[in-house]
Image (cartoon, rainbow, N blue to C red):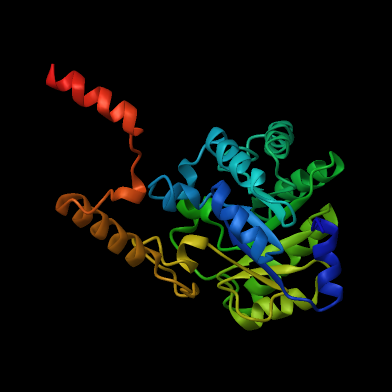
Length: 280
């Protein structure tokens, strides 16, 4: 059964934990969907783990559209959420609606935008009124890294926790169906979650959120440049890939690949014709 934005809100009422991961390609998305994830995010984290940029701010709308289309083709049941990339929604609300609409046309069921200013709340309201479900994102917001000054934990005291809650409530009132809380202390995230009717999705925000999301390349142990403290590694694909490549290289060099089962052969009569031709 297809999971919708409304269904995630129902999960909070049912105290059912929500599980999401990022994906950036058809085959991974298909596997994750069949595994039973509630949602799959095409995160702008693809800028780093897929495209090799040094931050998410370099990701373009065209790039997000390509990866969103690929993921959407592999998903039948999970909610497909696409990140709105840097400057695709900050300049003006009209651009935000048009850009979000492009991602929906690419197959996304919803979009995610970062920030909690009044302008962002107004944007969420307009998007929702336009028929585009919005997942909000507070705490550490990577697209604001140049003004924040680095990877900093948010909500480390009462005042900042209450400020996040205030922004979250404004986003909820504007129509956001869920809220990502990134790099927020467990106690702060729990308090914020208890005072919202929409589900909170934690990433580095402890176990008291209504759900969790991680970057799949961290979960799979594929991205080697760095791994955040909050990411649990469930596999070591980097090592699997390296070992597989080394074994392949060795097999090619020693002639054991390809073998007979991995090759095509001429029929006997055609083989005979070729031999005769070579000998004449």
